[in-house]
Image (cartoon, rainbow, N blue to C red):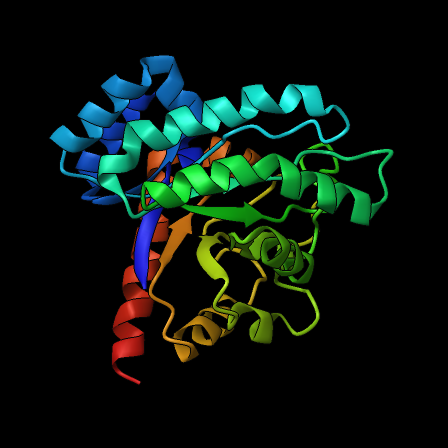
Length: 265
């Protein structure tokens, strides 16, 4: 498994500061924020990543569809196609997306609408060696998605011919999660911890600071010889209070210790 660091882990920090921080921390594989890249300019962001010799695991913070208004889909489709084109030379990588909210549609109606909306982007991505990965969200974020379980994400992905991004902080307590993580449609994994109790979202923690059985979940990925990225996506008030660089550095240390321990098993 390849460890990546997401630009979402330094959510309020601009693209140039991300580059400097990654260099100081020795990070080579990164997940980019489309929002930050667009602020700089897609071509300039792609050139900067290339100049620094970074490997891209995914592009996230991509926005979402208004599934209740088909006439609005073209703008989102064009935005995602532009992002794919800008970073296509860095492929393979994943475009991580959420569905968008769907109320007042019923679940099956929303899934059908999402399949129609994503189809042109999926074809465009496939032609350029890029994978679409559908991310599920916590059930409090119905504005971002109608897909709140890893199991449901796998079902929608099957309908749409895309992969799945497994967000461990959202699915760790799900029934049969170890088995679900063994599904080949899981092509990207977001890693963080959750310290209970918490009454806000997102409220993620550095791995090892919370209650998620991360070692067990990672072993489930290892059993299927998962070769995609496991990406640190640390976001929320805990990370803001600690500071991005310190939190990410501690997460990298946690991963290094885990890798060394695993090698000795």
